Every structure is written in C-alpha cells, then in structure tokens.
Length: 502
Image (cartoon, rainbow, N blue to C red):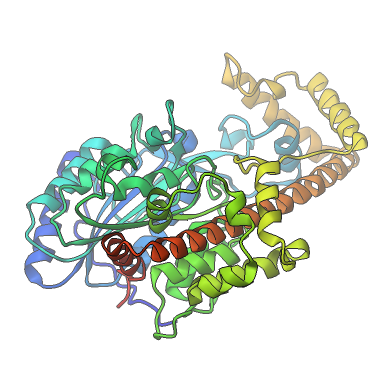
C-alpha cells in the first residue's frame, strides 16, 4: 500500500487555553480553505477524567495525526486541552511483584515513588487546539458552517462511550468532565456542514454504533434521511463495549477495530510493520469500506463494527424474525455479496472454523448470538483449584498488608503505602514471590481462554450481521423502489471513498 506523506501541517503550535486554541483552529480552517483543495479534519480525543484517559487513546490521536496527508488541516481536541497537567494514564514497566499485586488486587492508587503500577503524565500530543468539550465542538462546527469550501470533512473520535439512560438513542461520546454528546447532538452539528460536502466519520468508542443513525434527521431512525452526505464506521454495536482502552505503553500489543482499520488504510500497523492492503474491487487503492470488511476478518478483539449502510438497510428493509436471515441458503448469500463482502464472509468462516464451515453457519451464528448475549465481555471461569489458590493468596497478603484490598478507601494514602511495602516484601522474598507467580500464571491461562472465546463469539456476530446486511440489500433491490435504492447507492459510494488517500 502506498504510504501517505507523513508531514503534518500544523495549524498552531501553541499549547494554551481552549478559547485561544479554538481561535487558532478557526484561522487554520480559513487559511486552508482559501489556499486550495484540502481535507478538513476534526479529531475528538481523550477520556472524561484522568482515570479514564488511558495512553492508548492518546496514541490513537498521535497515530491519526501522523497519517493525515500534508494537504489536510486539522482541529485537535484532547482531554482538558492542555499539555501541562498530568491527565494521561499510563502503566510503566512492571516488575514481577507489580504483576502479583495487579492480578490479585487490581491496579491501585497512583504513587510512582512507592512503585504502584499506574501513573499519570502530561499529554505528549504534538498540538492540542482545545479541550474535549461541547463548547469546542460547537466552535469547530460553527467554523465549518461559515466556510464556503466544498472540501471533504473527516471526523475521528477516539475515547470512551457510555450507554444511554433511556435507550441507544441517548448513548454518549464522553467529554471532559461534562455530559457527553448524543447521536442527536452530533446530527444537529452535522446540519451545519454545507450541503453536498462529503463527511466521513470514524468512531472507536464503546456503544458507538448508535451514532450510525446520524444519517437520519435528529439521529432518529423514525425520521427521514438527513439532507447531508454523511457516512461512518463505528467500532461496536450500540449495545456492546469496544476494545482498546488500556494504559499499557507497548502499542504492539494493541488489538482493536481502530488499529486494524487504520493499518488497512495506511499499509503499516501501529509499530511500522507492513500490512497487506485490501483491494477487493481491484481498483488499485483501499476504500474505507474495504478497510471495514478487512477489519471484520482480521481484528482479533471483541469489537463488532457497524457501518452506516447497516443502519440504512435496517430501517428501509425491516425483518421481524432473524430466523428468516439465518435460514437463507449460504450459496445465495455468497452470490448476492459484493467482492469485499464475499471476502469477509469467507475470511470470517475460515477464522472461526468448525461449524462456520458448514451449510448451517448462519443458523449457528444466530444461535451463538442468542446464547452469548450482547455485551461482549469475556466471562472468566476459573477452575476450582485456581479459585482456591487465589483466595488463599489474597488472604495471606491482605493479612500482612490490610490496605491492599481497599483500592484506596477513604484514605488512598493507606493503600499507596501498603502497595509500596508489599512490592518490597515480595522482591525480598523470591520463594514467596515465585509461589504467587504460579497462581498468576494459572489465572492468566484462564483469562486467555476466556478472551479467545470472546473473540470467537465476536466473529460469529460479525458473520451474522454481515449476512443479514447482504440479505436485506438483496430484498431492497428486489422491491425496485428506485428512490430508496438511489439513496442507498449514494451512501455506499460515500463509504467506498477514502478521504485520507493522497
């Protein structure tokens, strides 16, 4: 895959308050629009608090900034909008003693001086224009509203998502220390973009699939289609969590939809290893839709991605019983699929193996979906001997260091002190440490089994959802509603583009 020019056009190098930064970003947009064709990019990054602002999110922002083409300009929101406060959560290199405490008691309160395995540092993002807040979002879209440019817009969201209080339509993209943004609020902002301007969204937070409904007015599927050219790709269905929020520093270990999708687009993974470019339609380059289908196959995580055309089909071709889809002959599903979909169908079945290689694979997929439920978390089942060993180990360490299990309690310093004492005790007693590490190994083995099963389950659900979309599209075309088909094909065309392509 051809690599993008990694020169990044800095609109502002100042690290300052959100208000001043927003002014700088506004100037950036205006300059870029006046100088010729460009890609206008808004990056929404960071968790809602330091405790939820893991370094993996920061690394996502940095990676995206590095792959933007040189002819793009961008507005970057991250965390509290500064690079001076300690808001990014990291997990420094752990000793064996740290591993024991983290396995038995979880990650404790921050205290680098006393060797706890979680720490915080200022952001190292090269340029932050504003805090991740609604005021910044309104300022960015307000500037897009003022511009006369027809240059495309790319919106990248990397952070946390929360389940809605009253349904999926109130799912939220979390913002810094304030109420998050709902799909309806994003749809309202999208209406500020000039008609005819293509907008592509990439969202990688938990429950992000609810935002696929921004193609409808008010993000409500009961309404008509939004009068804007908008498409999007989302890491998880509206009811499932997403992978990727970790304080671990080693990016080679990151496994999530975002990592796989962007590797397909750039031809390199997060640490520079070559990734074969998917080109299912043979046109010589990779569209976002091809990266999406590639991710369905290759992403080794619990993520179950969603694309806007899924939301379109589920509105205009409703199915009351998923058994209708599951019972569709496999040969027909393959015949109706386009090349990228066909590659994903075959690739998923090969990854899953077993019953996924039989004629009843969609029926099995539906059964797996119903059996596993929607959440997607790995359910760890420990053998009885492992449970006993864990309980004894926790009891022994808690008797000696009673504040280990408090997770901070009313006085976090108590836990900090005991964690530091426990680390030094274990390091000074290698035989005791070795016995606890054996318990850790058993726990890790059980967790590995659970994680592998959760990934397998996610692939089953990806297969079921893809099969359903193919069947629904076939029914849409059979109905011969030319107006609806035309809108669908326009959406598909937008999804097949690549705003980052040089």
